[in-house]
Length: 179
Image (cartoon, rainbow, N blue to C red; front, side):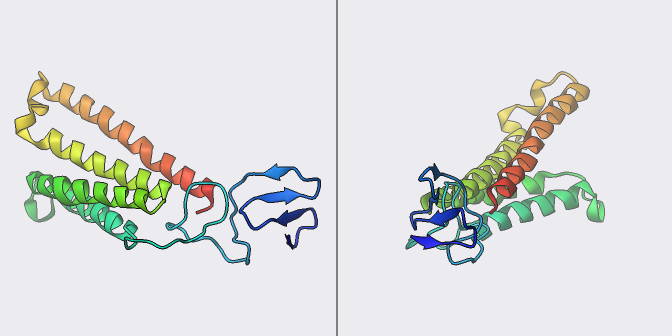
């Protein structure tokens, strides 16, 4: 059993710390046994230090983050009416394909490599972009179902407020995890 700098705790090498009285503490370790920090996005949301295994995939997080950033950036340019563009139809294709499907796939690949937080965050944002594109696509009849623009604006406000709760909640989980 390796000892640590804390005289009351020893690491048994299995990712669990034990007090010398033998009571196990299952907790998330913020520092690996050798004193190095755990990786920010490559760890897992399970208790114990991160043990990198052999991956069959590359790290999918950069792909998912790029998909979110690019789609958000394009929508922001339209919302700012850059060069007089006021219709956000150009965002719909990007929201379906890159911000939606690609980000959802990146989330599933995060699940395959064992990163629960990455899978949850990227899949949630991918689902958000797909649902946003569905709202903006006339064939689904979502916008046309409202009797007045005021009702539509209130409904869109509900949608965006509830969706915006997910971001700080996921960030709080990520920070609390020590990732």
